[in-house]
Image 1 (tube, rainbow, N blue to C red):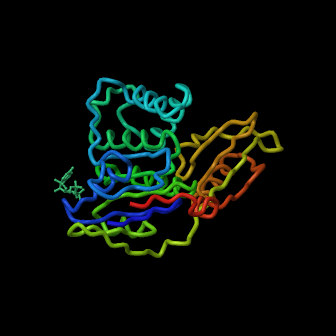
Image 2: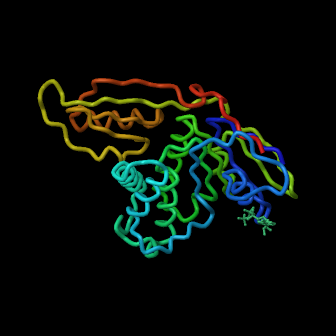
Image 3: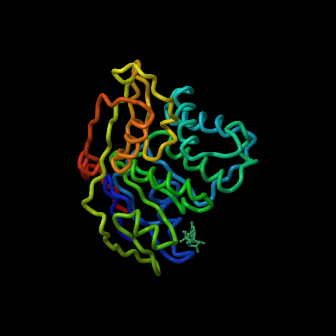
Amino acid sequence: MDMEVAAGDVLAVVGSNGSGKTTLLRILVGLSQPSSGSVLGRPSPIGYVPDRFTAHGRISVISYLTHMGRIRGLSASAARTRGNHLLERLSLVGGRDAPLRTLSKGNAQKVALAQALLVQPDLLVLDEPWSGLDTSAHRVLSDFIDEAAAQGGAVVFTDHREAITETHADGVYSLSGGRITFHGSRHIGNPASIVELILTVPPTGAMPVEINWSALPGVMDSALRGAKVVLRVARDHSDAVLLTALQHQWSVSGFTVTAGGRDRRGDARKAAL
Ligand SMILES: Nc1ncnc2c1ncn2[C@@H]1O[C@H](COP(=O)(O)OP(=O)(O)OP(=O)(O)O)[C@@H](O)[C@H]1O
């Protein structure tokens, strides 16, 4: 097998049951060692969503995410804030204080996704990540993938549905009989971009309506800077976010479009297996 993953790539790995997708992904992230061959230039940090997320603990969802964030170098408060932000986007039902073991399959999958994204990964590896997620979380997961790639991360995922791989992947690796074949895709060379949107109280002095920015599709970060709200939004959602802001009496004081990771960081890092 020979596989190359460049910064900003979104790649799908497909193949029938037992063809070796999970094994390949585990080797890619470093959880399994190949009996021969090697992985070169593996970036860090890596976010990984396994095919089975074992959520048996008594620990609460938010304590788990805070703990995982601390392991990855965040302060406890930064980890908690980031965890809450991700759970909000994924609309976790059942509460952040619920013990992991009480979560339904889909909600456990949401926690698995959140832990992989606590620190923006340079390599995001997702093993059948759509499995068990409800429709609204499907959309959020697509946003996560776009955002990771737009920030220069590489994304590798598996899924059995052609519609999903065609929509999301720049390229598809298919596994069969112990061999891997690469198929290109129409998305290659179509860099994503990010919009920084600065919102403020309008000059008229009218009070804008409070909005839960994090819950809007495509919003990657929201921060308060004095009286201003600074949002980072995936370019394909920025018009909708802008419209929502204007409809709620916010005034725009800044709008900057930056090129996505594929432009910015090119193929600086490559992992070859
Ligand atoms: N360490 C190992 N040594 C030898 N064989 C293994 C090892 N790990 C997994 N296998 C075998 O390799 C095959 C591929 O398993 P893998 O889970 O990677 O397939 P998959 O394509 O992800 O399947 P599915 O679509 O069902 O999730 C299986 O037959 C499995 O039993």
